[in-house]
Image (cartoon, rainbow, N blue to C red; front, side, top):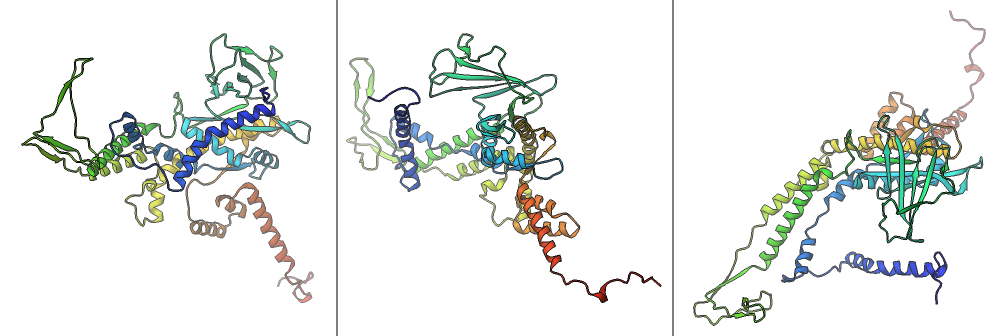
Length: 471
């Protein structure tokens, strides 16, 4: 008999084994699609589940594409000081918390769920040189976090993180202030959905004064996706939900027309149908001997019986309607039209830039808002590490959301260099990280110094005469 004590090896064996078994079916489905062996197309049936499956195939996810189109353009490269120079401490925290990749988790959830979060706290194992715990920066989901703002200053005032712990079965929560936090736990074990009644939670701290911290501000930082003044933020695709439903409905109609064009609807007249009365209900029911199918033959004993089929439906209007709806969706969401490049053939770079204009402007607005949040995150990290730096005056370096070919970038860099732009600034415009900008500048300086050292020393005849005077 295995030990069912939580967190024991036996307990983890059964827990992880059940999770492994649960995902096997989904993995098998994905593998079959990857190998080109999906489910076979179904023939028309009268079963209700068959029609539900038919409806499910009409869904085309443009909302995910609209969200990811912005996420793909958002990449923070790092944080520099007010002087534009890379900050070694900020770079260390950035890499230690894997923000190169984890930032995408926050941007994606902000685009799809309207808001994302980052939480800063002490790392359980890493320590700074001064003995303080290193900062731990974690991405957080809006299902578990929320922030309330001071109506007078607009600054974050109090925050909450609430989650269900699958290990102990309890719900846990922590209320954050700018100088302390208060832990809570549900009174009873829950199945995953947290209760919010006044008797559902108990205080789990050792002191009624909470657990103090010296971060100086709320450790939970919110990244809201383009909120309007006085309104709650919305996901990137909020303005096109009706069009998405319209697209799915149009696809369903086209699928139905296509199916019945390939297997046309039949009709019969002049046939005398047999009727019978249900003895239990007394309802008269007409028997249907003509069941459609590719392997059936219809026959009637009626003298004037006739059979026929309906004409096939022209699918071109459905396709034109679909293309128009998708174009409307891209226009309203400010997503480049070349994401649906049905009619775009051999377009020039200038055309791509023109189609990209509104989308780039939207991404720059995201960058301005999210950059402020990253500055707050790095300021909290510095406070956690016991360093006096205020990163609210720092600069978050982002990649350019506008796509430019390498040839265009090289041409622009050459022109900037010809008018005296420093190499470090040009490297920034090329999208290099702060660390690579520093390496590029140092390498260029070393090469210039080496080249100068290899020049021949001036001879005595080439030296200026100290006593000579100009005539």
